[in-house]
Length: 237
Image 1: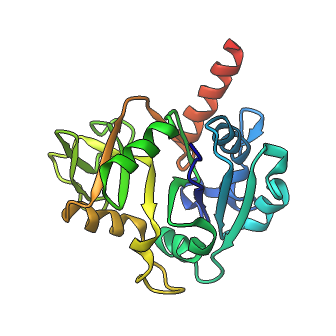
Image 2: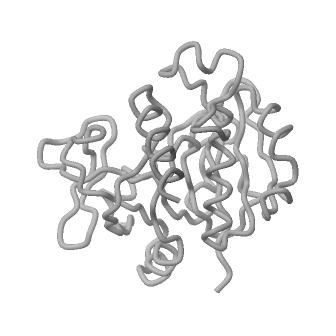
């Protein structure tokens, strides 16, 4: 089965990382000897992904200079640019739609996820819904839980005002239909989280529970944990 393309949202300012991202984008931060984007692209290729669209903004030219057309990673990589002002996660995807096709994976540019893309794609296709979010029972462990997930269904996702009953978290990988963004503002900033929230309250957001923890480099704590994960993994191998 041919894999859907992957949109990687990597255009933000990365303010939580302070001086680490003054001169380089988050995607190029060293993670145990390799730029993070290299680790992401390597694992996408291992998942039989062939096409990637990098949604870039802040210092994005450095990412393009490193990744190029993707052939060095066994991938076909194209680029979509935020410009000024930055478009937010939703606006970046809206701009990238001509490169993505009818359905596509969405991956955050700071996430390394131990997940089976084939299972995610099949779950999306079987759901009959226009979008799918992977979720992890997090219990506020790695970040604030923001999903009410019950009996295999997402009842509500709310990143801005998570409720006390929410025990799961957005794992960082979703599947979207382009039609969901067709009526969104052109060249205006908006957040993908708001799209997910609206879909969840309308019963239109499918959910797939995953069980391996996520790694992220969007915070100093997360960066340290991700570096340690790779050091440990590569020492074992």
